[in-house]
Image (cartoon, rainbow, N blue to C red):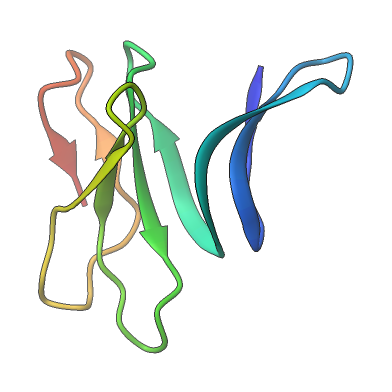
Length: 86
């Protein structure tokens, strides 16, 4: 499955085209990265000139801001999924 983005809610998209909603907040996101265990997503919403990394907990449907300086992008999960580098 592949995670799709683009001004719409985040959805899982299977190879046969079926989609399942992941996050209902329609927005433009960039740098969307799934955690190694598939339970969280690191992403950067387009918010004007600010650029911060957020982590979305898929099971709890909670988005938590990870950075506050407005210049963070390109989030990458550590292999064990305990840390996010940006």
